[in-house]
Length: 162
Image 1 (cartoon, rainbow, N blue to C red):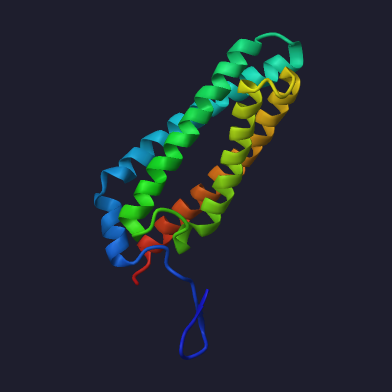
Image 2: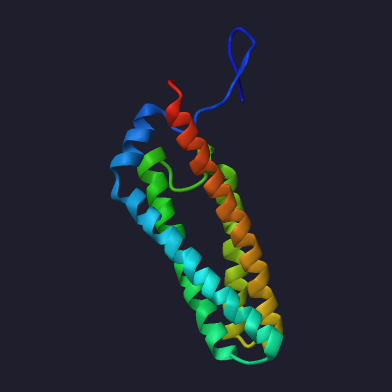
């Protein structure tokens, strides 16, 4: 919320008109729009494989490959998202409109990276690796929710004159 000179509170808009124009004309918006649902589908498949492994003890390799693929998509969407923020807001990360989403994204990345480290270094047993993946996935779902909420707010604000 922003306090106006009259003392009333008005919601802070996510985008200025110039930022909205850059958002709507950059190819990086399309890239993010494609990668996000693909990453979510990879997440769903991987989640099923991880749960299957934890439940039955079968399918460790399939679960492992799916987590590595999911992590690759996460890294890709983070890099392209930083490019998108640079184009739209003029800074690579932590633009005020997406500050907390970016902060939480780093937690998601840290958990996925811990999994990759544990896998490559053989630092954890398989079951522990799967629980790390589940923690990473829970954080990912929260973070995806943050971004979906912002998308919804942007659409609502677009319907209201500035």
